[in-house]
Length: 401
Image (cartoon, rainbow, N blue to C red; front, side, top):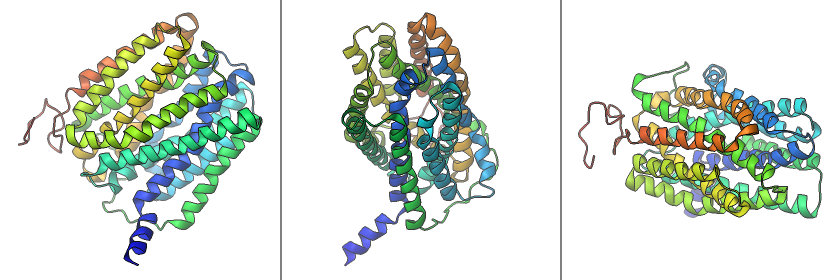
């Protein structure tokens, strides 16, 4: 009986809700990401410049994520996260009905509003609901479960597209609809969880968080090279079909499912500075190789390795969790997403024009972004905490610095 009670308590816990939200997000976003390049290429006749424009439009809601703090004057974070997930699912569900530049810009903007507000609330809830001592490991588990959600998505895509031969319209509707169904379940299944520490409902910028802001900005710049141009290279340069892109994503997912929990445990053992150092050195090598790759197998291998390093970004979240005032989680998550998307709004459209004449320059710039991130990461203390945010500041009394 006690096992049943414990099991039921877990299934109605905040931790389990974070896991289900991760799956719900992937059902829509992973499918949209998988279909987008081929749908834009085959049905909307996109060029690299069109794709750059689309991705810049997609990042505008992320740039405006700071406005989430004003929405929180009316809604609780948990409610806001679920509404945002529903908007993401709706935007994806209708995408297939609008195979044109204008149509894709509109549907992409709708799903992006949902995605970015969800990610803002999700980061805040993760850092509030998960204990500092176990957060890296639990975030690794959430990432692994989200990867399992991706695995289901990509497996279904291969079957539905390759063998069932369903049209894009139906495919987008299926996966967007699954997200909406899971959101409806969470609304009725989970109670409203109590906020342990009331959040500040205004924009917060603190001088002592400057290193976190800088790393977040560089992460946004660097991420665009992977999300937009590495994925586009697979389709435009190497001619990958939808099912082939799905296979690549399946490999990525398998890596995350296996390694993400281990990465979380490693962060607990070795610290955020070491984890981020490994990530940025790896990305410098990968982006440099992207610039000169001509073999599709090597290009695909680099894409998988590139995606693997994303799991190490858990360390940036837990670094902030350790240095932050607990009241700052929600407002800083909003501000951080805006900072992350300053470069993201500009880079896709500007680099899309560069791509037309010199694709290699785009990836070499990505290597430069990773190098700057590496220099910044070395400023993280071995044991970050409030009052000891960087190695440049006044040191707290710690062991093992």
